[in-house]
Length: 261
Image (cartoon, rainbow, N blue to C red; front, side, top):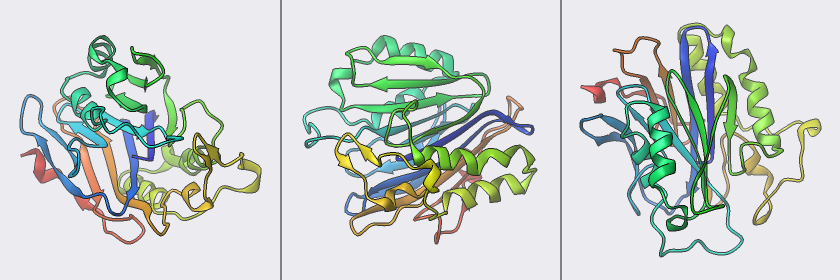
C-alpha cells in the first residue's frame, strides 16, 4: 500500500473514512476484494497472491488497518515474514486500542522488513512504526486528516501535502458526494504544485515524478487497485466498502457490501 488517507472524526456523517491506493509492481500477483476471515470477526480486503496477507483490512466492527512499506536501499530480506500478516493481525481485534496494545506487546519488529501502519476505528486512531527497534513504536493520533505514503507520517512530503489539500473540503461532501469526492482524489494524476515540492527523495534516492501523483503510472510499477471505506456511526452497522480492481482512473468502483453477509 502506497497511499493511505485516513479521515478521523472529520466528516459530520461518519467518524472514520479511509481512501487508499495500492501501488505495486505489475508482475506481483494479487487477488481482488474478498473475505479474508469469515468470522470472529469477519474481515474483508484484497489478497497478495505471492506472499499471502493484505495491504488493507477492514472488519465488521469498523476497525481498519493498512500498511505502507518502507523503501529499501538494498533488496528486502526475503527470509523475514511477510508484512501482509500485520493488517490481518490488527483486524482480528474488535477495537483499535486493543489491537494496537496487543501488537506492541506481541510483535517482534526484527521478524519483518520495515513498514508503517495505521489502525483505527470509531473511537481511536494509531500510527505504528515497525523496523526501527525490536518493539514497534505506537502513537495515538488526534482527529484530522492523516496521509501515509512511502515515507514516515511526520516526514515532509509534497505528495501527502497535496492529498491533504485535496481532502480539505471533505466535511462539505454529504451523502454520495463523499464517495464521489474521495474517488476523485484517488484517481487524480495531478502532481504537487511547486510551492509544495520537497526534495522528492526517499531512502532509496530520487523519486520519479510519476509516483508523486495519487494514481501512479510507470512502465513497471503503478496503482493496481483502490479501496474506500466509510464507517457509519452506528455500532451495529458494518462499514461501507467500495473498491476498484485496477487503477481508479479507469477501473469502476464496485460495492462490496454483499461480502458482509
